[in-house]
Length: 194
Image (cartoon, rainbow, N blue to C red; front, side):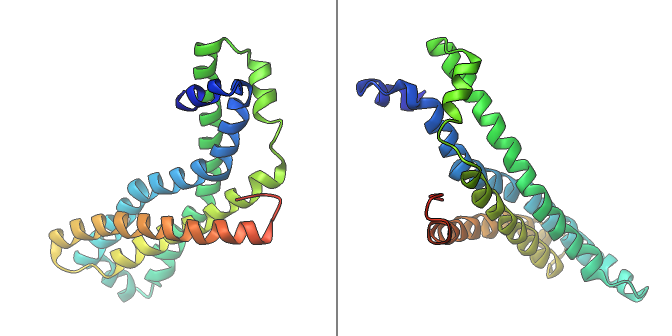
């Protein structure tokens, strides 16, 4: 809806669906999903593992000859790596449908015309690299949160700090790594554009 005002001045309202779809699929969807998961899941992983550390549950697992790293950390990292591309796809789809609802309310554009215009400039190669980069985001969220949780000290106050640090550090790393990955995508897939 914000872009509409700018595009109307140039008579380019017909490009709104394509612009929205490209922006969501290439950048907004993956990064927003990563940041949302860093806030929700990163805090949860950090707090859960941190609470297990301060209550000596991890020590109890190790006393029973259970590899606590594989049991607690690796499984969470793999879950984040698998879940993030799926959630990004859902975020992209939801954003495009939301764009249709807004466009339909403003201009009365039909469902068929909106989706034809939205996907007229998108290739499969536009979808794959940005969605695959979310696997790296999942690794960062799971890895940072698990590491901080595993090294929690200071009782329940330490668990709270760990939860907050998990969100902050994961979010900052996602933004930095996103810049690097976008540059790599430009280099490796010149036609894709990030």
